[in-house]
Image 1 (cartoon, rainbow, N blue to C red):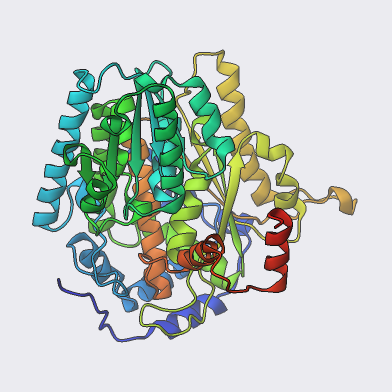
Image 2 (image 1 turned 180 degrees about the vertical axis):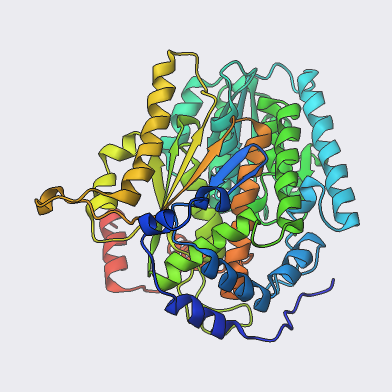
Length: 509
C-alpha cells in the first residue's frame, strides 16, 4: 500500500506569522464594516445551514489560512484520504471510513459493499425469526464501538421501534445490571462490538451477559451472539459462529466505525433504510469536502476557526451546545472524535509539536446549560468559542411554544455573546465580542445526521493537517490500559505510593 508523504515546500511559518500578527477587529465592527457579512460567511450543505459570521474570520484571515492549507498540502492529503493511501503513517495503513459510504479506493468500496450486504442478510434472518423471538438487544462496546451507535439511536429513535436496544460500555455493573433486570434473556440478542476483539471491559460485560442468560435457562447463549469486529478469527476463537460474525476493514478506525458493521444495532433497531440515509448524507459531505475550494469548504472553514482561536487567541476549550434533546450525546461523541484524534504532542514525523493541539471539547444541552455554565461564557475570564446546534423541525408533537422558545433561546445566546451589554455596574457588565458558530438543521433524520457527523470527521482531519499531526493513531489510550492490566495481574511490581495506598485501601488483604 502506498504511504502518503507530504513533499510540499514548507512555507507555513510565514502564513502563521501573518495570521498571528493581523489586527483583531471586534465582532460588532466586522458586522458594521460589511453589510453582506452573513451571506459571505454562511454556507448550506445537505440540509444544514452553517453560520460562521459571528467568528473573527475576515477576508484577510481567510486568505492567509487558505495559503497555510496549501503549504500544508491539505488538498493532496484530502485526495490521499479519499483514495485509500496509507495516511496513517505511524501504523502504515489507510483511513477508509469514507469507503463505507461509497467514496474511496475501488476495491475498498467494493469490499465495504459486500460486508454491508452480509450485515443486511443477517438482519433479514433475525427479522425472519432465525434467532427465535427477539425483542431486546444488548450492544456491548466501548469508545467508538459504543459512542457512535448510542448517538444515532438517541437522535433518530421514534419510540415505536420493534426492539429495545441498550448500549453498554462502562465496566461498572451499575450500567449493565438494570438492563438485565428489565430484559428477557430468552428474547435477547447479544451484540459484541470490538475492533480488536480483545477489549477487556467489553468482554467482562459479555461474560456477565452470557452468565445471566445461562442462569435464566437459555440453552445456548452463544447461539444468540453477533460479533462486530475487524478480527473475525478472534471472534470465532472466542466462540462465535463464523456465520454470525460481521467483519469490517482494519483501515476503519474505531471512532470512525459507525458506518461499518459497528452500526449493525442501529440498522437493526431503526431499519436499514435509516442506515442507508445515514450513509448517503455522509457521502454528500464527503463529496463537498473533496470537491469544494477552501473558501467555501465547510469543514475546512470550521478548522480555520478552530486554529485561529486555539493558536492566536489561546483558547484551550470549545463548547458545543445542542438545542435539541435528541442530540444530547453529541458532545460526548465529539470528545472522542476530536481529542483522541488530535490530542497529540508530536507531528506525524515524530517531532515535538510547537503549537496547541486539540482544544478540550465540552458542552451540554440548551436550555439547561444556560442555567449552569453560561455565566462563565458571558462574564468569565476564559474566552470560549461556542458552537450552537438547532433543528428547525421539532421532534415532538407538543404545543409549538416549546420549540419556538427553544430556538429563540439558542439564537439569543449567540447574539448576547457577540454584542454583550455595557453597564456602569461592573457586576452587570457583559463585555461581548465572544465568538460562536451556529449549525441550523432543517430536520433531524438519517441523511442530515450522517452529513453532520461526516462534517465533524473532516473538520477533525483538516485540523490535523494544519497542525501536521496524524489523527488516526491513538497510542495515548494504551498506557492507562497497560497499567490497569498490571494492577489486575498483581505481578508484584510496585507503583507509586499513592496508587499502592489507594489499591490497598480498596482491597485490604
